[in-house]
Image (cartoon, rainbow, N blue to C red; front, side):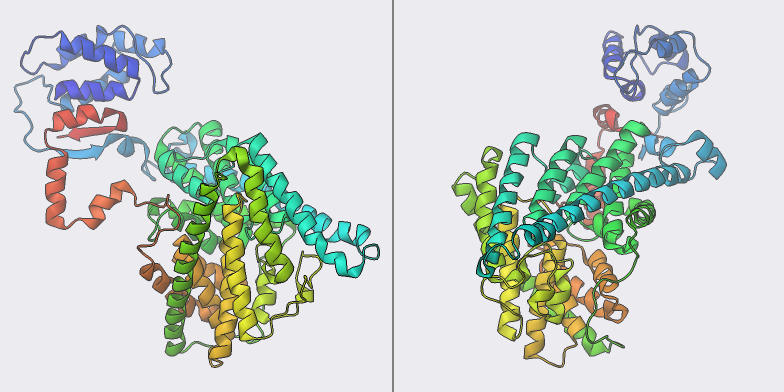
Length: 599
């Protein structure tokens, strides 16, 4: 065990020195447990050492050879922990596993606030506040730039250009051709951006990186910006929420690793989650709901990175203030129902749960349909990025067709939700030109409302399968609002806000697994606080009934809590005993993870 102690200590300082020390130990005869003096002699016999980044570190070697007063006691303590003695002390009988790295560096409160702040200790509250503030400002300004470019392009392509070159020049009956003209042009741009700038990734990729690497590479930022802007401007049923999440997640990890030089994976993951939380907090204008959504999206059943919740929400607040101040946007509701729910009775809450189950059922049908669509693209070999242009054009065929027939289905739905939920005339639709479409479609009946919901889901599926990049939160909200209005025709006693918001929650939660964030976001954006109980029940009902239907495949259970939360107490004790049986070998095989056996 004394050998494991030293191997453990030096493995964290460098692979080369770890191997060097092992070779020295291998040459020693099998003597009884040595004393501290013998171990110090062994250390001095090593000819080189490397720091944690793998580079040569002659200063550390000098400290070891000179018996440095600061460094040597640490190694001596490690030796004592592993059984090296200066007396005839009995060998340890009981062991427990602790994470020494965490005890030394990752406690939130180590000494005092001032001392932790001055020394900028890793993982402490002062460090988290400073890093969260920097990440919040960086992400807020980045989100503002993205927002300004997106709004400028939308106005140019769907308002300025048609007003200048179409209205009064083309025959009015041909105005509708502007939709395929812009749709196919932007589809080509989406494909070309992927071919020439690389794979942008998507929400599933972002979640996978959070679990595997704890950060998203900056090389995905430029491809994501270009692909998502072209996707949204082409009228696809995906919005800017997921691109902002990916961009701000990459920025958060970059600030953590490059600016503050963090190396601990869980600390870097915390800062990445800060960026994700900041993106959605700023975009939705709801810091608590947006931050929780960003944390929930990584898992299938609630927030599993719970240790980062408070810091992520704090960063969400900073990002919200920065973004909204720069953009000149107020923090307020964006949807208005004709009838405001004054209060909620228990039966309304129960109705919300039933609607949530209905929404989950529609989401399940959508998921099966979508995988069939993806399989079709796969059979034709369109999922390879070298065919990104052809893939986008195939998706654009359906997107454009739906837009010409049912204009309510165009774009991501943040603004269109209002027209769908209130069944407003098509002329009030934002962005799209012309608003009448090919058939002068209007939402006037149960059938037309149901048609909008079905067509919106079809548009979402082909937008995703076509390789467009964006988020499907608002698109699912809009589809849910359409189904909610259809339900109100069948059951007029159900309040419109409850029907629309609970249907939106039921569909979205079944796909994204975000019951808490979805509830707060919908209640905030609609300005309907009395619907929270109903929306929450709808969200939870949908979460439970679709627990075995994962749509985002990269959502996984944290390995370090899977065993501790889901094993019976007796089984867990057996598991622990088997897991750490022969603790010397266990320590040697896990030295790089910072694990030690402590007496």
